[in-house]
Length: 384
Image (cartoon, rainbow, N blue to C red; front, top):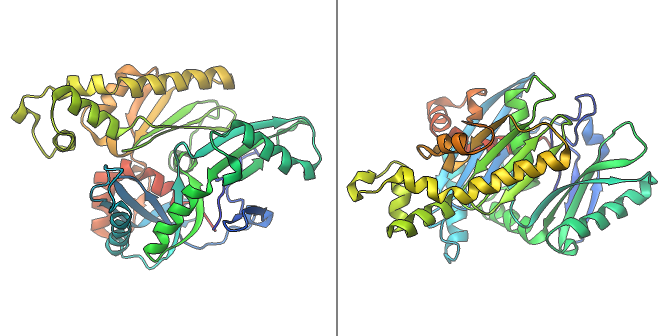
């Protein structure tokens, strides 16, 4: 098991970091060893990108020929009762969903890369005065203890120093609780998979974006907004090629509950309306107005984060927001964001730029659910 940073710009003028650091994590002893050879020696072992969400499991397998990615397998399966956090059957239902994904995808690969996000994960910059190499590790761990919203003694810390042509030591650290890492590892093991690497959802989004969109201008600041059921991931890449990641707790489930409470309607019915399985006219519901009211907190959170980023990083303002995730498919949602946010918002399906080599069923899944599977695609782009 390895927990690592991964951002696919390390070979690009040394302006970004950690494509494949090979960070090994022993969850029993709780230490990290960096295998630097892996930075330059990419082994071609295919993995499954496994995005285990709260309401669905998404799985993607990719192959790469020269510079072109192709999808060889894809699947998505809902988790029964996934929106109920206190559901006693949630773990077994999640394992069943992972197993069904494997069966649907028809892949033989058992090596999985999983993602983590939420309040038990932190991605932070650090900048120190000149330090001897053997003192950097301790300085990073001290920095993590000060900036992480959880006890880092109960977690794993990984980091990468970024060359900047100056005497100071600058880089990015990632920390996650061992409890969260172990929970993902346990789920994959129960489904007979080997969880070989843990990534961060926000970094996986940036990986996917950089591979699919190939931004032409290095001076453009772009954001990817992944709105899931339980969490919203906002990943920003600026003109310095350094990532900014924030996970917000306001997400699809909160919006559904807000609409349900305001209209005295069960959340299950609201979900069916938002996903197009029921007509809102049947219960005389103004879904457009209700959606706008329910999304206010999310819009404020995103707007405040964009302003904070611009102020802290002294970067150019975000020009475009690529919206993905399960809630991005709700009719009128992206248009609402486009009207309310201080940057243009567009629906993002990364598979518009990735060809499919997995048959008609695979193509149908990606055409219908592509924006939902962006994190899984980014995870599948990892190398071990």
